[in-house]
Image (tube, rainbow, N blue to C red; front, top):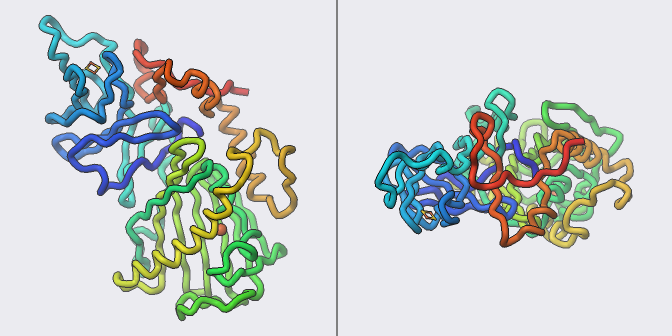
Length: 364
Ligand code: FES
Ligand SMILES: [Fe+2]
């Protein structure tokens, strides 16, 4: 996993009055809402003696540690130490606080220390405000796989004819594939030939072999978009925002949009169609080995059909080169001994932090 990207952490609905413990790559965070309802995401480990802030409560605009009642504002600064009679809390009484944005019914945090003008924006969903499109509420799915494996699966059209019986096992035609560089990613579209099995019994989703086109693109390491054009007028588009909860679990927040079947009462039916497709992928993803993508491409045999996977991995290497990849092996070695924090933007302006910044693989 990388620092310096936006990660989906929970749904807007999940974050109510109580502080919520979140996990990302086995690191603990706390989310809470202040008195105005604004969401904040902080490192969960109290700077005092390691209390878990998410087990505390919210008072006014602060989250309160349940151990000795230190109060932390949304900025991460501790405003009050009840047992300290004289003076203000010391400068080191602070925890990392991350930029937060709520979009599409999802609470996102920017987990990293880049200044605002250098951050990759959250993916802007053009259809979100467009007439003629209907968006589902975000669906959340846990998959027992590493998130890069999940993204790569979404970038690969050549499993459809073997894995997606619910879509009629469509056969892509590689001669029609078109690739396009986009900011922070690569996009491709491909045409399909005949379906091998009975097509969908839902009229609007019945594809015409001459018109069926589909493709996908990644945007940063953990955003994946899938566009399915059943006919020239009928489309599904799916935005997957992926969070590595750990090396073995990926939580995927799915926002599905469609320009057919617009009636709200069809949401559930559309959801079921999408879920069926996703479960076909999950059955494969949960059995890939090794768990994490190998460190070098020579440990797998990538061929022509893996062009998108290659492009994605090349991009990951660019983020490796910036020194943004978390060193999971170092974290594992220190398990139980060190509480790490993903560095927040305030670490640029001030030093003197109690928690160590999470170990990163060296820049190259
Ligand atoms: S550990 Fe949090 S207040 Fe003491
Ligand atoms: Fe798939």
